[in-house]
Length: 322
Image (cartoon, rainbow, N blue to C red; front, side, top):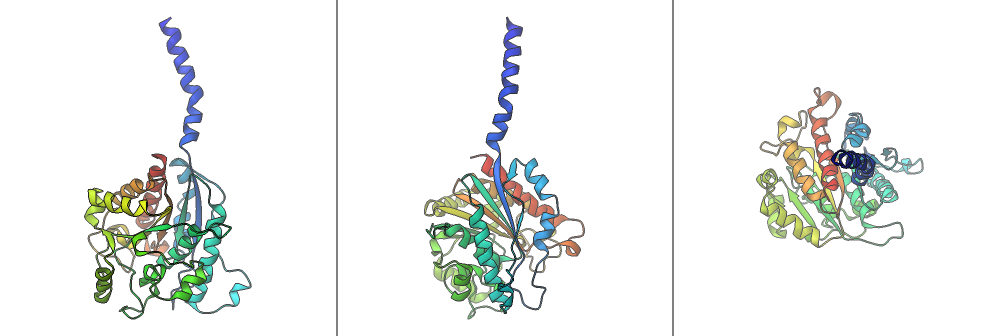
């Protein structure tokens, strides 16, 4: 009798295993946006293709994810190609990005954006904010970057658009760019959280103090501290969905060789992946963006790409733990 019970239990385990595995599978949508709006550089970045070429589809399956459709590419339509101006063309491409995000949205799914640089967060935010009928949701932004990207034209030292996208998303500057991307309503400051910032321009630092920004330190990320959980939970409680955006220069420079804006004393990709996992355990966290990954010639041994892949794996593992 004892042997029969064991055999029956084994048969039952085999019969239910496929269903258990299927229940843990996370639906994933991957979108590449190579338009960064930078001047005096090629318009289309190779950064998104570089991450994709690391066997991303296969890895997503190994991590417990399932692509809902082939990896999508953002491009300007032929009629849009007639437009000029790097910033304007980037904004139009981001509107297309938003459309693709919106088309793929499903329940119990995460969207992964492989993005040229941080300017592309505007398209992801616009895609998450409005459904196909134009109904708005409250979107939270978690912004991991060694820089604040909170400058406005009056405060910037470099003049780089890449130092302004969070300020643009918050409605503090360059309103035409924001509206062209489709983000008609700016994000309230209470719906934005910074992580890992350690290099601010002087007047940008004044803006951080003026607006009393919500932020967590590198050490908070490494330890997944009580402050980290408190700040994230407070922000997430006030929104409908959360987008986690990572500029790869937030990481320790050894993990992003070739990145021209790396800053010492960042978290490792494994530590940040663990923090991302915690955030994706919350069902409101629905999207991850990876921006500014050094690629090809700048990353000869593949460390930057592996770091980016670690972060995507962290998001999927977190969603599995819900």
